[in-house]
Length: 503
Ligand SMILES: Cc1cc2nc3c(=O)[nH]c(=O)nc-3n(C[C@H](O)[C@H](O)[C@H](O)COP(=O)(O)OP(=O)(O)OC[C@H]3O[C@@H](n4cnc5c(N)ncnc54)[C@H](O)[C@@H]3O)c2cc1C
Image (cartoon, rainbow, N blue to C red; front, side, top):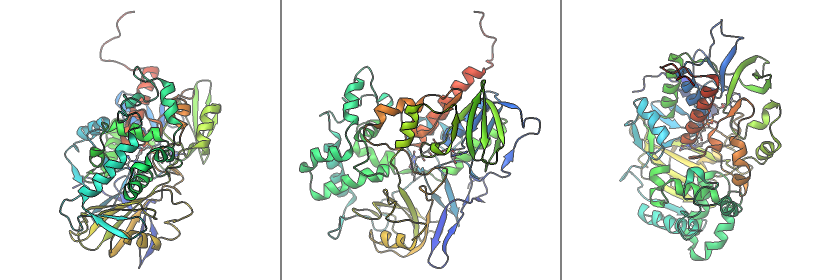
């Protein structure tokens, strides 16, 4: 049982035939009261301001207050977690954004350990659950495979696709946390690979694949990164493959199997509560419109023109939202160029509660409004199943806010089902995300990644969108928050337990 009460957020949607589309779902992530700034501190220059209460911001804020720094957290939403949050509906948890965790994510598991959640894991796939097969529908009718057969087809296609260097990616990407050149591979070698889109790479190998294998490969790319094989850089996938130990067999275990049982918001909430216990002050529903630095003091100006000042700012606003923020001094031309190009992930993630046992369900419809579906355990009533499905970039094709009834039709293509409700967060129309996790087009990483990671004066830029390791994952957000807090601590000053040694 979660120790938290789920409060109503203004985010998230539920659609039923009877009730239509209703916005606002309950989550442990909503913070009440929304503001806690001690009177004496308001108006002062903070040692640090953290903008954004996603995982990057939460880790940064927690680390800063733990080291005794006067820190203020400013967040536009009414809740913690950013692109990772879970909703509670009649006892069933729905992870609306970031969901799956893995022991390959060391920082994340360290946080789960710290907050007593390391064993609090549930699995998405239920072996021997109802409908325990894989549906593949490539337009010429729907066929059923065993999970083993489908996994073997995907693995064959993926292994050929990824084997660009004849060494399963090890030659081009020997150290995935330092992808852009290291002691074993030069920047120039990596840059050459970075020019390839996934479509370019598929053209090189497609003759070696059957039509079904090709369909599984072409659909898994937008499933992973929300874009299309045309606008998705191949280097990103090579790097992701390296991060999971050059092994497609572990794809499911690392990407889509293990979840925090009571939802991601329980972890985000624990980090936040720890930070407030240590003195973190905060203001939710506080969107920032400008970040201005003058004579070493930074002003974070809200959309209602309130001005918060600090010696350092940790800015965790995602790349897709940065165009809305006015920076003075302005961002570098190279960073501005990167922001204008932007990322490519416009995925849709939709849950449904369906009648009966579909816990074993898996499938891929390609081409289609949805790409993949996962049976995702029983709902709280023990009789209906939660299913989770993903679409790629469906902008202009299927807008869940305008035509929610079409979600049902698309889901039924995987399997006949009686849908009780559909639950989702529309990341594309969300003003504080504007897209999903960040994946980039060909040529982007070698040109812009290092620039995105740079500080902007005394503003540290920290977000999973430009992490070194598990970029576009919760793990990457935690990496970025921890690194930024460390820089701030070193500059603003840490009081160690013993006096510093005389120099
Ligand atoms: C659908 C989906 C599925 C995913 N699945 C997984 C998964 O299974 N596993 C995994 O590890 N990762 C997954 N991810 C990725 C993961 O969720 C993100 O990489 C991670 O949550 C990003 O954290 P962050 O703190 O860097 O950024 P964010 O979570 O985006 O945090 C930034 C914060 O800044 C706030 N903000 C934005 N603009 C302003 C403003 N103007 N003023 C004040 N505050 C502002 C936002 O509200 C937000 O709270 C998924 C993402 C999505 C969208």
